[in-house]
Length: 332
Image 1 (cartoon, rainbow, N blue to C red):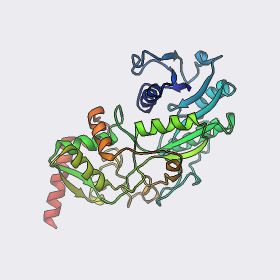
Image 2: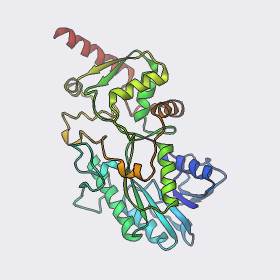
Image 3: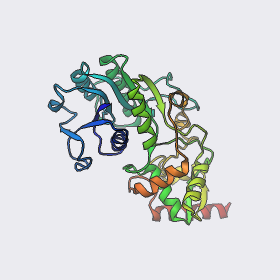
């Protein structure tokens, strides 16, 4: 295929480019040239800005466009209005955050989604706003290119180049060993998808001109946070000792779900989001989405992505929490 990727040098976009080149596709990138500008010197790079400067796209045509970068519907509309008559297929990378209620496992693509009273809002102030804007992006694309849009409601994307450090935190922390603070409930469901698996599937769907909305995360078998940490220890041959700490204690001590302890949803305190990482992926699996072994994903992340200060507990804070937890356990 002749593919235009809007972005292409950060995380999922980078994997999309690598996978497309491996398939023999002809790739064009459109971005500002600010993030990893020297990547992929062998592909055509067009410079511009999603926020208004689209001149480099005028008069051009591609078989498929993949959009992993739009955050607000205005960006999708501007691009769609320009390319609607010259492209056969448009993929928009959306998010599982679109769903209004994930209190129960098994949310599928027909479930209610977030709405926003003022659809001109572009500032993302909370997860609900983020989800609502992704919904509006999906709709804008479909309005402009009816029947030609694939909306990929991705879950937690992991693997090499991950800038968020969320899954990365656990792979590096468990490898480091010692007492590892882990959040109860240990049977909380977890879902994630290797960026390479998502990229391969997205390109295959675009090649077949598949349209519609798909939850795209994994694995296809249930996974818990306890099982995930066990797999991290096994893959890294770590002798880490997992210390399970209850939700009430963590919240009392100001530990933030998802950011301080990635993947933790504090399901008792946040019942409406308790099954955010347990959506129904059967539609995407039926359309060919496949998942490499979790061990492979763990090792690829460990070797290809670094932790960040924005995700996870720092060593001193983790140590302080563990000491406080042990003291409380002894006193009771």
